[in-house]
Image 1 (tube, protein in one colour):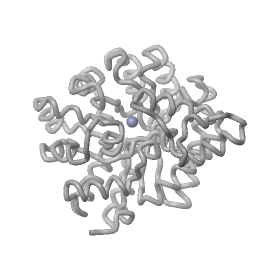
Image 2 (cartoon, rainbow, N blue to C red):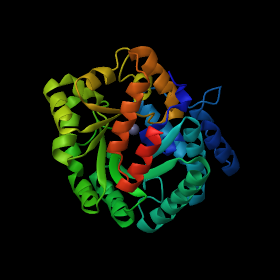
Image 3 (cartoon, rainbow, N blue to C red):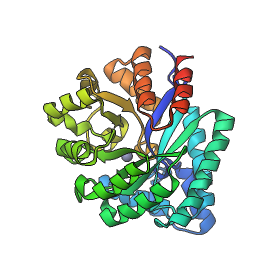
Image 4 (cartoon, rainbow, N blue to C red):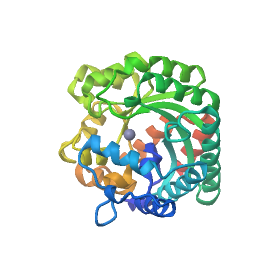
Length: 328
Ligand SMILES: [Zn+2]
């Protein structure tokens, strides 16, 4: 089998702030005189207890990302790390909640900074980045509309999708239909977190109420085999993040993770890291664990990455470039 780092990879589910290396956040905190010591353990890794606490730590880390310049540096740091993992194309979730508090003018400046960093990283490392603007579910439907407005104003070659993250246990997918429709009208592709915590019903709601093409996680659909069949038939793609699921306890073990069963049922699955330093993972570790646990080999990984390329939200010209690199 090819060395894991040498497999060209696509990643479709990565939160930009959630990919911030702890050292990067610590040095910004020091620079700004902010005390974030409570969110790190003695080894300097992010420290939290369970999913809701994870969200708290995540948002605390984001407080030092105060302007476009910080997001420029963050994007550079994240892409450098991804490129070293053999990632050739990645889509990152970016949120105007953390970038100018959903103000359209401010958001444009933040996005320009991220896009600039992406252009530079592509020139030096060959890695391609596209953005998916996300609203945050626990901030509610009205705030989501503000995010959708930012998405409408900046949809284009770089900002290619609209999605939703945050706490799945509050509100319903359907409550956000207005925001998702706004984004769809602007030509953006749609994805939403569903079926990470909220059971198969969340996945069902995401597909039928919001009409998304991809689902963030979606793994709990395994509780409803009719739905699994529907996903397989219609080609809805799951952005599966096994290491994240094991770290947060969505799945008790790697062996018990449903990714292989879903794949065997014909569901289109892809592999991503979600918030890698929070879950002590990398793309290479995910691949190593999948190889070890389920015997996935070069051919399987090639298939997974082709699926991801076909499901990527970029334009077809970019997709053709990515597919060509997968073949070479
Ligand atoms: Zn996620």
